[in-house]
Image (cartoon, rainbow, N blue to C red; front, side, top):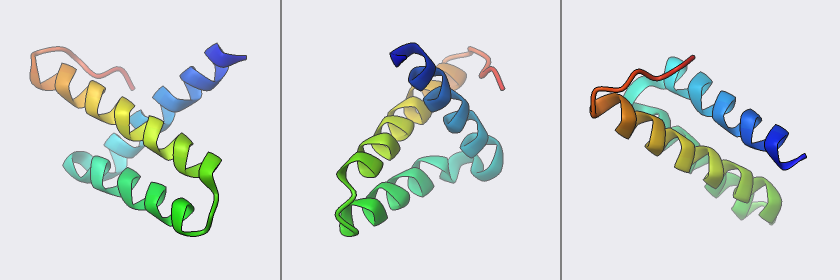
Length: 69
């Protein structure tokens, strides 16, 4: 089941990058903060993982790799 969640995290990160470009990290961080403010720790954790995936994918892209969408 963890592999399915990891795939969903990566897909979500790709969608955010497509929608927001360089602002994808900011958007994910804002959503994580919203969940945290509402007391939804699990939701905030998911968005933090999406944020980490965005950072990883964007770093790979800037290093000459191609981001798979």
